[in-house]
Image 1 (cartoon, rainbow, N blue to C red):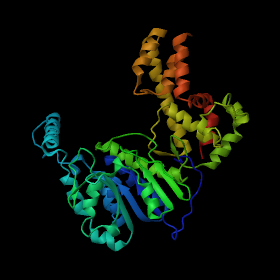
Image 2 (cartoon, rainbow, N blue to C red):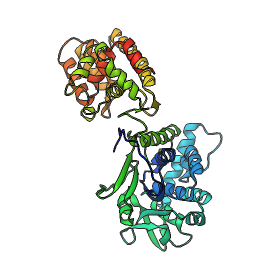
Image 3 (cartoon, rainbow, N blue to C red):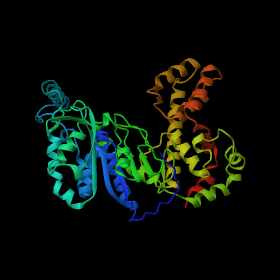
Image 4 (cartoon, one colour):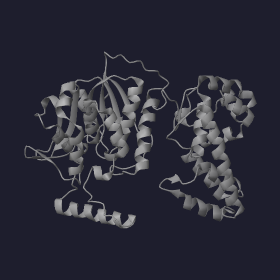
Length: 440
């Protein structure tokens, strides 16, 4: 995935793209954010191919229901997809949730799958097959006919009239849902064959393709891009699940789709962050090299291997790299658009917070001594990541006497967090010089 492109795309309306949307249940809100960005960029699209929730969103877009799709993404709930029973007034929140979970469990046992009739009603409310056909845009969906053990790629021009919603339900029939039937045949989600139907677009004859992959469950075949102009967009942060309808997650993942897409097209810069391009600040930064203080000044004059992570090594935007590394070391909020000065200010604020937090831990004795540091690290390391920012643990290590525990922590931090070298250098830079560099 191209996440740091500096290219500025120009679009010819006579040379439109085919948009391929992958499956992923609730994570499909990412597609809504991505489409919002594509519209802002003026990207011409005349064909939509999708699997599962990607097929559903493709149908909305083929009908021109952009505003309705935005509203749906902002109000979507679990009840919009599966029958979890009516809410019972008077029950405390916990008891209500237990009641609905039991309802879902009974449906699974009795009906051999979750009842998705609410989802069908939602599609019937918004989608009008005649309107989709009248617009004349190509629309394709993928599913698997398990009666015949055969994947199917079905386009609107070959669907019997009145069957569009049937095929959308077939494409979206995640294992665990009640499996729909069409003409006596049983269907399941196309993700069991190919969750991101890029090859379907190629077989249809498309060579200018934009793919949006939301890391949904299922099989994702490696795309063969030779002889095509393919732009691949994929979520840069792993989060959520196919039935995760938490409102905060849905809103954040929608925004991530928007930001990732703008970054792929060069409208935003960054690696882990999303920054508005600022070539003037980059030029000021290079000009201020002698006043930044070691080791940052030395790196600007004589780049050292390992100072920046390998993925950044050949990138000439030195200020961007420093800001990105420093923000990562502090776990600064990622799903947000920043100006250079905004991100620098947020880094300074978070740095002060972590230094205060570390000082309290050290002062309380929580981190004094090698044994206590080892215990603290064991508690901190969960699910393959530090719960607190790496800079916090670095400060604890500095307060610990030299020894194996301190040395082990440094090795661990260096191994899993290659941004730390550049982050430390940024923290040591003269703050007055930094302020003059990043401010407009």
